[in-house]
Length: 181
Length: 285
Length: 156
Image 1: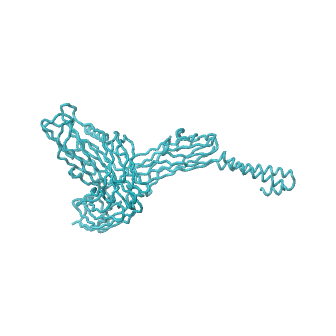
Image 2: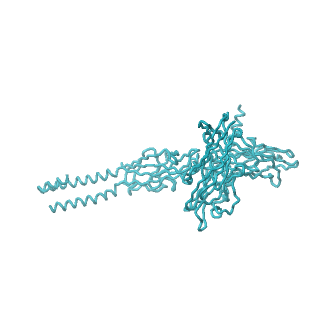
């Protein structure tokens, strides 16, 4: 089209001037329209990223509770006692074997008074109801495996031996379970 | 019925409120590249009470005792593969609030001229939650007794410098049915200069090639898979249960394989190594 | 003929000058500046990144003609991880924000799932910020996950 206009422009000035004007308008229109159209829509992308890290979760879920005891009367909470035995919950990768060891207090304290605690016993199971649970001596430790869902439950029981002249008070101590993963 | 329901609700609520006493630790194994010289561990408190956390380090790596029980060997403190002296954790004490995340940084300052290879230590995360109230009758003349529970979680830290490789050899595979359980032992020895991180897979097949299921906890699986980390050598004992009514009389084969695959770890940190396999015969009389 | 050539040169020069001048004023450029970063995520624990989070929110910058523009997102429903594993990702009704000042502290929130009309200011610069929630399942496979968000900007 431009070449045709150039050819025709050699015929007379008037036609040439009109042609140039037309040409300019056409070019300007094309440029403007083209630029505007190009700029109408645009897009860009960004990413969303995350890194999943499989955790291990060890929880002291339930304290070992003897409740009220009486002077001179030993009291035992067995590890099978779901309501009162101390309970740890472990969750991690399915079927992973973990090594459990325990730090067990020999006495409980209340102010300056102490009370012996003995005969620790443990049970570990791959469900929270102790079905198929396995007993173990906490002082030795144990290496059970997490279940197919990556969970394990551990219960600890013991016996407290209040003296006949045991002072009243709240006697406390801590059981520490160490989990090697 | 109502009483049972009330007890169940009380227990459920009690358990939920007590479940705060610990922190989630992720990842459960840290791999540090010599070029970065740093790593991190995320602590998350899913509970409703703040948890006090103390961080420390020890040297150790997993091995097995004579019964096949996996244990942590912490004796070789002066080991040439120990990173205990030059990897530190920050902060060493922190409190993680309810539903909060906090990061523990691991910074390495390896000695000059450290040879290529993998170096190990263990991170100890000790978590202590707020005291749980002692239950019992409120009576100033009474003796009340309760023990709180603390947890320490120990995870591995592996520092890799330069080219590292791994592999494992498998020997002495044994399998036997004891009661309703399938018990296996094997000897695994690491090759290369880095720990072998992978899985042991066990599949029980009969003489026709049909696969017999195994039970793990409340789940039934066709292949029993157990994560394993062979740092030097070990002879792990694995146990899975045979679902009722047990195995019929006959001959069986246990297919035992050790593969460098782990779904619980970032594939980037699991070193490639050829799988090793063996099969042993089992007879159920 | 000479006159004609001169006029053509003038026309060409005008055209060449006009294009960049025009483009400077009207050309639309959309640039992804920063992705949405969830960082370390724990299985079963949702991870929220707010659009006002200066380090982890996504940012897309817009340069274009002043005036109204239509913002339209194409959002993923999941991030892809090792072995093709998927992790759900969700966007709330206020997870996107438009800032005419490009300041993360000065945003007008909008629903990234719906087209949104915003106005580019006189200087022709604006930003869009995005937040999201990663929803890892309790057995989410470990590893790195990624997805792509696309913002389409249309000059109205």
